[in-house]
Length: 335
Length: 118
Image 1 (tube, chains in turn blue, cyan):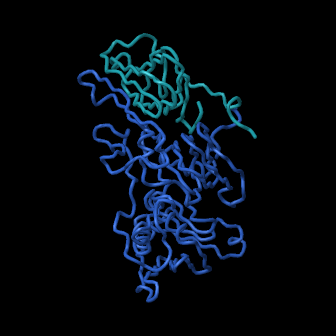
Image 2 (cartoon, chains in turn purple, cyan; image 1 turned 45 degrees about the horizontal axis):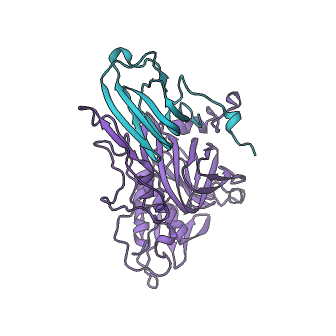
Image 3 (cartoon, helix red, strand yellow; image 1 turned 135 degrees about the vertical axis):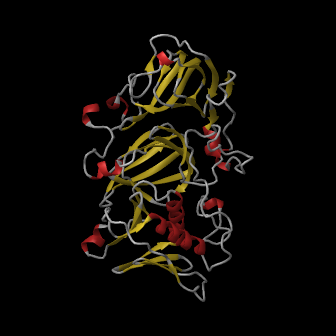
């Protein structure tokens, strides 16, 4: 991918609706996206790939909502996006040894806004009322079958980040009954109370606390980190997880996971080859680094609370990519 | 220190009794993981403000500025430790706090002791 050249604008082209199932197909650059009752078929000049439709839509709406996140978002081991923070690569087989060896891999770079518009257009046509790809599977309907009425709610939600700290005056407020976010069924057994804040006159806006666990317990989306506290470029995100992370996340920097409740099982692979590197089962209180050279996917058997610490320093991804920084956070000298 | 991302980190502490007074040149955040912990805040005078680059440090003396207030936090509560303040923790019984901060003068690294190797 050439990061020096700004890609030309590319618009997504929609077909007429399929006469039987009702869904449109979409051409975006060299990629064609088609869905049927069960699957999404992705075509590119040298190949074709199929992904189960629920898996595809869960990945796509999160990719949109995360702004294509940090690094690589693999929808599966073949297809995905890489964020270059202004441009986005869409690839098929570019990180699959088999596809590379047989020369059928493909990668194309687009302006970020063009990809966002394309993915939003596809998602809106393919998501029916009653199916919410941001909810856990037990909490929503099915994406299968013919086109029905298009979903009427917002395509993405729950992605508004705090600027300094949730709940501060002028900043994003935590979830509550008033914001339409009741405590999720999976966390109904916890106690929730508010911290006691006693501010001296004039300092009411300067000292602050809130119930973080209550905020997480009220999430109506899964696998969707929300910024809760930021100091300099250190970002703390929290998220409510259930079922599987619908993407395989390829890091372009280190991140750290702190398991706040229950457990998540993580598959860890080499980012470039997909070769298995390990498996980690994190339980409540466990802390784990996810280095800059891996991809990972999580499985949460019961809804759980996860904290993620990110370093949002601009340009960090280039330093890991060119080897200036080691991919793992704890080097031998600190052991 | 339990997480380290270049200059930034997460640190955990056993909270029992009364802590020293701390200050940092940036915001920090504390999440109470266990127990009930009081956070006392004073506004730093100009000559009390930290001159080091990052992370918490122990103040050489008690703060002289105006009292800002107190927060009593329990499990699941997150507390802002604002830039420009001195803060002290008090806990009548053992508690656990998780800090979001930068590596600094009082950071302790024990990776060979805390990491699981197999």
